[in-house]
Structure formats: structure tokens, C-alpha cells
Image 1 (cartoon, helix red, strand yellow):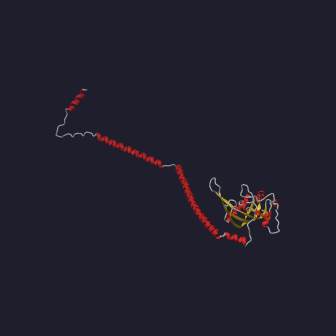
Image 2: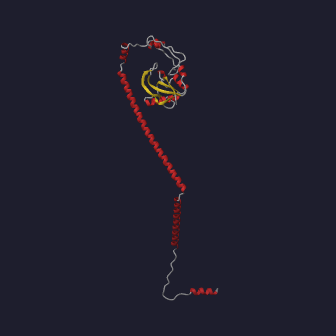
Image 3: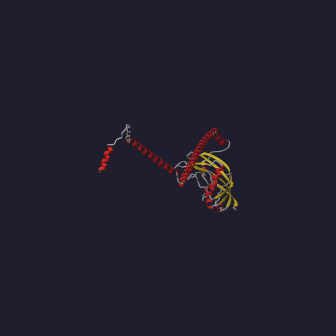
Length: 318
């Protein structure tokens, strides 16, 4: 202990002889060192963050095959639906344009028809027609005794058959040649010959029509088939309902005639189309076919439409 104390005392009293000045040691700059250390730490943190972001990006880019397949299928399905939707919209637009064009054509045709009807009405002098009928042709107005009235209950047609023979005395007196008499015959002998597979040559005067819907809860408008194609198609459809079959090349339309008149009692105007069909048919359901013969086919029965006449054509060999 004593030696250490003496050594420290000798060290304190020691100095260097000469004229060289000792260079003073610089005081350490702790603040700068702290700033540098903080900057290094920030740079290290920034590098770590960049490395983490890069790893996340690489992880996101490394998608599994299932995800790629799913994504591809989703895009494909979306493309199909989008294409289908665009096509439907295009078709709807085209059809709406077609409907608008057809409606415009119908309006023009109605206007032309009304104009033609007015011209016909103005060109016909009914007084001159009556004068010629009375004075030149010897025609006269029907007497009360020559008019036959029929009562129809809640229907616009009459059955064209009856178990009781009608009295045609007045009709024969008006229309039959002098000395001729009228007679009625039973329909039963013909009906008993209606067998499955039997073939008949027929003539039918009918009123082929179709209904145009008017809206929910409203009665549709009845229109006549004006083209031969639709008239033939109408009879094919009726044959399915009434128990007989038609071959496409075995029947045709032989006459088409329009009738326009005012309905008795109400005075409303009636436009009526009478189409005459002729051809050969084959019976498939005798019961339904006989009912059609007795009750008529189609509408317009009140005006004489729907009657079919038959001539035997033999049995079917099919």
C-alpha cells in the first residue's frame, strides 16, 4: 500500500523537460456520435422494411395454380355472360324496330283501306241500285210472311242439326222453282258410315280466324286469316281438334270471299270472310268427327259458315 502511494506521488511530480508543447486531446463529441448512431439505426430499419415489402410482393406474386385456374374460369364465365347479355339486348332492339315497322305498315294499310272503303261508298248510288232492282229486275221487298225469325239464347250461332225436321214451306215458296216441293232427310245414315280410317272427299265453307290478345282481363280481338298459307294451317289445326287427318297435298283453298253488312237489331257493321276448302280427309276419331259435322267447324256459324259436305272416297290403306 505504501509503495503504491509513493508511486502515485512520483508520477504526479514527473514532468518532461524541453520546449515541445503537448498536444491537447480533443474532447469526444457525444452528440454527433448519437446522431450518427440514430441515422444508422434508421437506415437499418428502412432496409428491413424494404426487405419485408419485397418479400410480401414476392409472396403475392407467387399465386397457386388453383387460384390462377379459378381466376381464369371466373373471367371466362363473366365474358360469356357479358356476350350473351349484349346479344340479347341487340336482338331485343332489332325486334322492337321490326315491331315498330310492322305497326307503321298496319297503320298505313288501315288508312288505305278506310280511304278505299270511302271511295267505294261514294261511288255506289244505293238509290239507283234499288231503282234497278225494283223496276228492271222485278225484285221486291220481302213480305212479313216470308221472313223467318229465329231465337238464339245468349249465343251468336245456331246448331245446324235438329231431331225435329224444320218446316221449310215458306222458304220453298220464296226460293224453289214453281211446282217443286221441299223435303228433309235424316243425317243418321251418313253418320253410321263414319268409321276409323275411312276416307272422304269434302267441301267446307269456313271462317278461319285467330284471336289477338288485348291485355290482362280483356277479351281479345278476333281477326280473319287473310293469306292462303295461314288459312291452310288453320284447317290443319282444326282437323286435330275434330278427329280427322289431312295430307298437305290432299286439300286446298278453292274460293275466298269477303262479306260486309250490318248486323240486324244492333246495326253494327260485320266484316266476314268465307273460305271454301276442298280435298280428301281421313277419319281418325269418328265420335269427334260426327260432332263436327253436326255442329260445324270454326266461327261464323250464325252466317252459315262451318258446314262440311262429304262424298265417300274409300278406306285408307295406310
